[in-house]
Length: 283
Image (cartoon, rainbow, N blue to C red):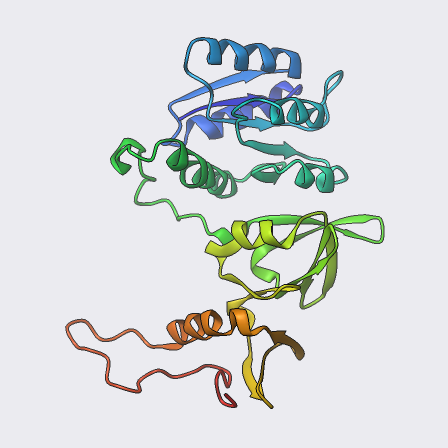
């Protein structure tokens, strides 16, 4: 995989370049100090028939800043995925609106960067090369902890303040027109995103649609309840309705999660599923 790193601060660019080159999945790293040079490199790579696979981009830069460059890239016929790398939190919401693949805060940790590379490989590289064997993409070393989807950090608006929450901490998501409200154990915040888009993006993290207005984390469901023909789930004391359209799929997913794995070489006995936290107790 070939990537571009952009940062106007030389020490930060050197650190980022070093971390990127340390990842065995990245074969080549271009490094530049401003957005104009970045565009030249990107165009030169496309003209040579070897477009870069991703851009790791600082936000605060003189002249054309990272957000401006991301807007330009979004108009490419095949825009490269963008990962913002910055010490500043304030532009986070706008960065999210630009559909950045990820958002990293400085100083960048090797494990967190590995997660971003993992997402580029599996969400972008595989889709661009469906016929290419998996062996063509080098695997992570055996002693490297595999990145977890739940480590993704989401910037949300809270009364004019941008706060960062982990995807793993989100209990459920509520549609609010062009926005979505993300609920955690400690509060909630808004992001400018459609529920359909979040459903697709977070499916692999265990999120499932239960209603036109709600997306929930399976791991946070405490109870599945059927009363008077109406199905609902309880999450942290909050009761959310489940539409008939989504009921069967939700039940299947919950049963699958609750069923204990059979001992190797031994089939699971009938009725062995053990719901957790009362799942299915009233259904």
